[in-house]
Length: 281
Image (cartoon, rainbow, N blue to C red):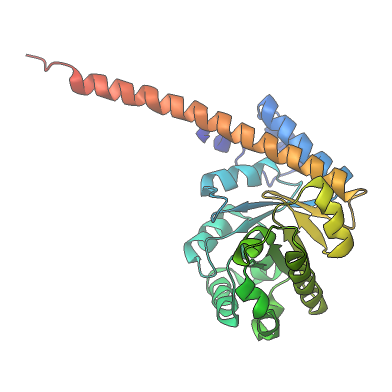
């Protein structure tokens, strides 16, 4: 991974320099970048979504992905909590395009997130960032009117509805009519106050079409891929392509981790041999 990060440093440069750095990528990295480009150009992908919370992405990995798709797609990251200040600070250093706060269940949670952003992020940069919250519990659903009436909501531009956690909070499946109705209501109310709505959680190419037709969100997201409903020629096909990219990304991550793990094991073996070596007389 260290080699990968070194290869992808300083990508925000001229077109010629970017091309030269593209040549430094491995074949698999080039393939991933081309898949990302195709997702954007043909299937309406608007962003890649990472996370330090349940996604468990390290800052190093987020930095790598941010550089890998530089100039193609923005990276939006779900932080560890509404007031995860270290996450906010480190992700701003990396240069991600947006931040999402999970588990916002009340106006208080929203205020804590916005306050942390104001305290840490440069004002000019803050204006340009994608800023959102996750609606993912029945508590949030019940308090959504209060949350959307909070003055700080005007500083956000997006809300993501996490159907997996939302459904678990009421003991239902993600496609249960009750969960669909809750998702639809949150979507309608959030859009009424000017927020872009993305729906995720248990999305398949089949139910992506159902969600687009019945819920009518602006975007549909998987764990790592965000697809625009409006710009996808066929949301089901687009989501299928998005899942293929996500699978390729995860396989790549696993292979790199395996390589690094093998290297560390060799280093450990060398150290153990040194420890076990008899002392020189």
